[in-house]
Image 1 (cartoon, rainbow, N blue to C red):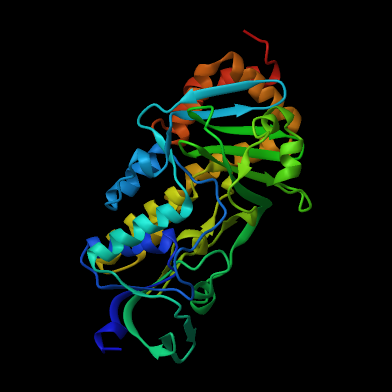
Image 2: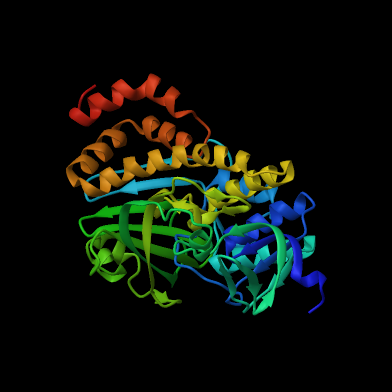
Amino acid sequence: MSLRSNTCDVLVVGGGPAGLAAAIALRQRGADVTVADALRPPIDKPCGEGLMPDSRRELAQLGVELEPSQGAEFQGILFADEQARVSATFPRGTGVGVRRPVLQQLLLERAAELGVRFRWQSPVTARKGVAVTVGGQRVTYRWMVGADGAASRVRAWAGLDPGTVRSRRFGFRAHFRRAPWSDFVEIHWGERGEAYVTPVGHDEVCVAGISRTSGVRLTGILEGLPGLQEKFCGAVRTTTERGTVTLTRRLRRVTCGNVALVGDASGSVDAITGEGLGLSFRQALLLADSVEAGELGMYEAGYAALRTLTERMARLMLLMDRFPALRRRALQAMSGRRELFGHLLAVHVGEQALPRFILRHGVEMGVLLIAPGAA
């Protein structure tokens, strides 16, 4: 290894989408960046694989433009249970479903194009009072970015608190060979959990299931949704079912000295929001601003604001998951007032301010939740 390969402005630990997004944003500001990971791409992770329009625009700021042929575009969101369904289109732009390895490869190519250096299959080690090593070799850097997931070792090395876990659920994902039947990402609610159906190609859909019960798998969730299960009769599963734990975790701090955390290392919101990747892209852009300014205070101060809306929407939807009667009442109410669901979707994707929604529609929502049939 040359001396230069072991010296950089920013060492990013973790080569998933969050780490690559941070590397790209930093490199766009002129930083010399090295990404290190113990694994080698493709690095997959179970997720719903849908990017909302706002996430898609932030990805474009990183120089990655998703073409329709690389996935499948969708126009909005549909919620359904055994009694009601309601849908709305996005107020601006379209979302896109894209396989996780495809997204990672696009980010990887963009990072390489900008001159980011990579150290794959190179574990990073650090201990207090001992030099940081990558693949057993000492490295020097000005800033370190921890993008190494929910069980972040960088977070532990930096002495940052692991945070408070506010919700824990169990998620599973598989892909099926069949043409999408809808221009929407569909979220089907049942007693065993919810199923998220995202088109990811002209002849393939991603199905993700989330449940509060550890023993329930994707098959069990679909069995509790017979109308949805019928759509997969005869469809070939193209990937094996993979599972993960989805958490809502908040940290008191995400920086310490010259170390910053991004992605799941910095905390997470339940996958019910579909905004995990979008948050990572926004964090990457904010972190680049902060590093360019020469201090991490801007990132620390702005981080909470990035999460606030997503956390609020997550709490609302988790209430619907926890209390089926409330969910049924809410879906019945919105199925009769579809414009309300459209306004909520606009809030979710950042096109309408939440305080404005509450001011204009809060009373109406409250009345409808108490009595769905009320005028």
